[in-house]
Image 1 (tube, rainbow, N blue to C red):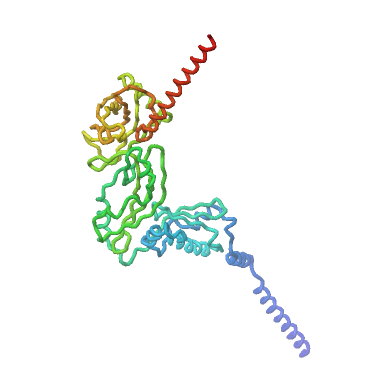
Image 2 (image 1 turned 60 degrees about the vertical axis):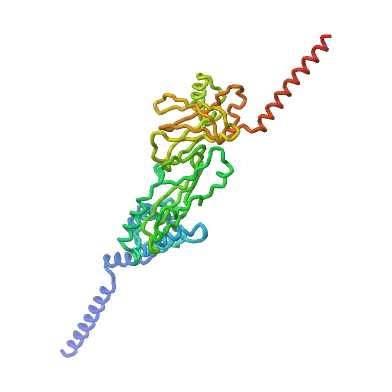
Amino acid sequence: MKKTSKILLSALAVSSMFLNMSVNAEELTPTPNEIQTNQVVQETTTTKSIDNLTQEELNTIIPSEIEITTTKTDVANYFANTENNPDLENPAEKALKEKIVSIFSASGYTIDISKISVFVLVNDWEESYIEIVGQNLHKDFTVKYTKESGYSEQDATYVKNKVASIKFADYEGTDAVFTMYNIGDEENASKWTRDTFDFAKLLNDSSITIKKSGSFGGQGAGTPWGESHNLYFYKNNILYAIKSVFNAGAYGTTLENGTPVNMAKLNKEYDKELYEELAKELNNRGFTNIIGAYELTAYGATYDNMKVSFTLGNDYNGKEVQILHKKKDNTYEIFKTTVADGKAEITVSEFSPFMLALTENTTTENVNKAPNNAQTSSIDVVLYSILAIGSLLGIAYIVVKSRKKVA
């Protein structure tokens, strides 16, 4: 009996050990849910590449607004100095790149900073966008700048009111300042540079300073040429106002109230219909010796009885000129004036096309032959005379030779 009990007890002990081993084995075997969880953890620790990034993913990763510690004064100083130092990097774009790299990293992406391009708009620094190099991916966002510790709302209001009080010419909806040249004064106009106008004289306030940066320029046929500048207005070395101003050059004159008037020379080929219409009207009035045609455009306020002078050159001094004006209601008026000091002056109340002709109709050879300043040089007159004499001699030679043959 004792022996049997010992056998049973041994069997029970072995069974107990087996049970304990089974339980431990079950605890070590992961459940299906645990397997899935482990896989998710493993995936999140794996970095992702932007090479397969989609537009939808980019839109999700990059927020609609990104804040940087850069100030607007930092950006203004960059634009004001970049002309003299083209190697400078826009501090806002640099800060945004670094911030965007950290945003990608937080989303599980490793990204080289050279793989992204970030641009801050020249005309609105609060607008920016990112592009992934080599991929057609683009995302717009706004930029929030740190406000400087020395920023003053009182100074901001003062500067903005001062800037708003400056009176500019209106060039196609843009504030502009003009440097005007006489018609045909190509020598001086060719010296026009981006800094022909001193923007500092716009403000009679030494506590406000202006820094400027050229952004783009261009020239069209008969239209003002120049370059757009972003003006940055500071007080106590802190930026408070930004204004875009077009620094323009043009052929024409300036009215007594300061309004610039562009005199664009009408081209017989490109403005053919208008040119021929004006020439026909003058011809019907008995004037065919045309010396110039112009389209006048005012970039500012106009008024009645405006004095306008056409620069013709001293060669025309003392000569009578007919100036035909096509009015806005498509009717015509004509002015008769005598050239003095190289100019023909008239008084008008509106601007539109004008065509000039000499009262004397002794010749029509100089029609459309005059340069921009509507002058016919003495060299041209001598040349025409030589050609005319040469033609007569040729005719005489032919006649004499023919007679000899007949004889």
